[in-house]
Amino acid sequence: MLKDQTMNKLTLIFALALVSTGTRGDFSCPNGLNAACLDAGDTVCPASTKCVDDDLVCFDKHICDSGSGLICESEYDKVLNDYKVTVEKYNNLTSVNVALREQRLEKKNCVINATTLEGAKRCVR
View 1 (cartoon, helix red, strand yellow):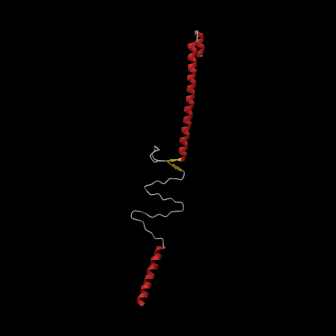
View 2 (cartoon, rainbow, N blue to C red):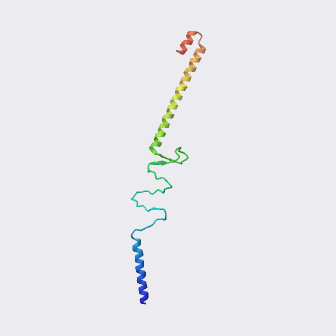
View 3 (cartoon, rainbow, N blue to C red):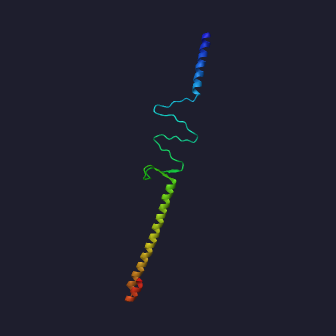
């Protein structure tokens, strides 16, 4: 019986030693990895990935020429605005081109239909 009590005490002491060791916050990492302490809100990014800010817009990497697949929203907005300005300029130039062609056609028809040299000169002035 005394042997059983001694064995129980030893088991209890061993169990307490294990519990107290586990509550100190000791931990280990697998080989090749390092431990890190993080503040609230910190983000962990494995080496094989990229960490980005919350304000970035991500696209499929095949859409962007940069190859990274990431673009800042402000830069995306700038490119989009530049595109809209370019389209507006193109549309304006197209309208001017159409108007000039119409004027040229009117002058050409006027000259063709003129019966005198003076009439033809008035068409192009």
